[in-house]
Length: 395
Image (cartoon, rainbow, N blue to C red; front, side, top):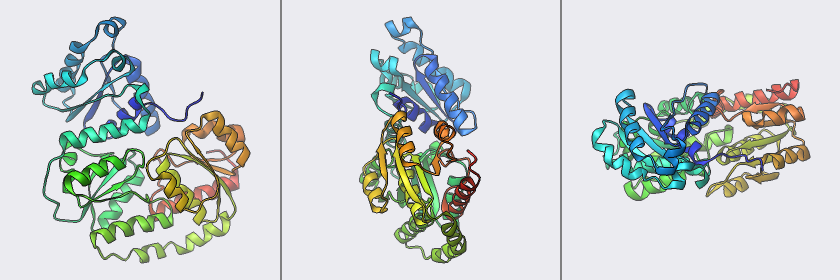
């Protein structure tokens, strides 16, 4: 009754909002655009522009294709975006508005690239929204281009920017690996058009990243890796080793992790035995569980809103022994937290209610405001856990 995941429309808007100079246009009532944009702005700390056709009751009864076409042309002329992503809402999905036809009829009248996404909220969850946007972008925009001269990768299924993504891109650059395209955070239409020039794809999302990687492998012959993402010391080492090995780059990554050996030992000695509740998306949850374990802490609970093709297999490979929840509602999640008695919660702002009601410190590892990736990110997160446990102050 209290869901932990949101709808397909939210995921579609979020995926598009990461692309530079792109606008989502929702063919639906104004509330769909307002509330989605408001939530994404609040979570990310920067304005997210979401357009709407603002359907009225009569529009829903009689249809509003002409209104949609006018909104597309107006958005193109007024905002001059590189990409307009037209999305259905629950209302227009139910009445069967033909977005594809409307888009085809205006394509020659606008300068922007344009895609159409069936995104009625009831159709599925946010993961499907991410996936459908990425597949539409690849299928519509990607070209068969020559591989780049320098070793390069695409990061697929990454929707948060900020310190983590910047750190990963800069670290790879120092190793001689360029990031060709991030789908979708921070990417441009030009990046997506040349996505096939990379030598390797790396999926950062079990739910939405695997199918685009498979498509790119089948169409362009680009292999992909899907595990692990660089959270924690061991995962970070394996992440960079996998990329370096595939691209045949000789880089002293073992020397780099050696610089953090003393800090790793200190964190292990001070955090050993601490019980941690993990509430996260699937790919991040697996990585966090392994990170917690490698520092001698005990994952008391691993809760995920959904799972992808490899999630449970990868979680099993960590050796973690804890209660695992998938898609549990908020009541069930709260009950599991009470039952497992974590001393700290690794989650996001949605877990603030549990932190306050249970008196358990919360570390936000979900919304990109603090560095969590790489060896330095592991030190930051470990230090935050240590400080929270010591102070028992809710973050």
